[in-house]
Amino acid sequence: MKQALRPLDLPADRMDGEVVAVLFFEDERPLAGPAALLDWRLNGLLTRRLLNGEATGRRNEKILVDANNKILAPWVLFQGGGTARGL
Image 1 (cartoon, rainbow, N blue to C red):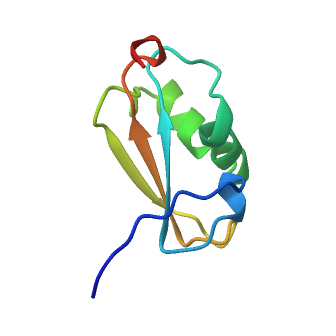
Image 2: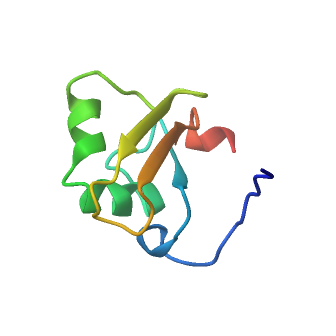
């Protein structure tokens, strides 16, 4: 089965597919953009992990979570992007 990436011009919580992937950064607090939207939809799941020291946003950090029917896609992948200044 061939997999395909589809960049879409939709809010992250309205994208369908198996996984919605978004970047979050070490130096961006509070969260912003698509990561903030999905964190809000998931009742602050990523924020809690950041506050507990379980997540940092460092480059290549990956957090895969069940969306619990809160968005269209069944899974959310929060991908650490390092520092936002580095982009």
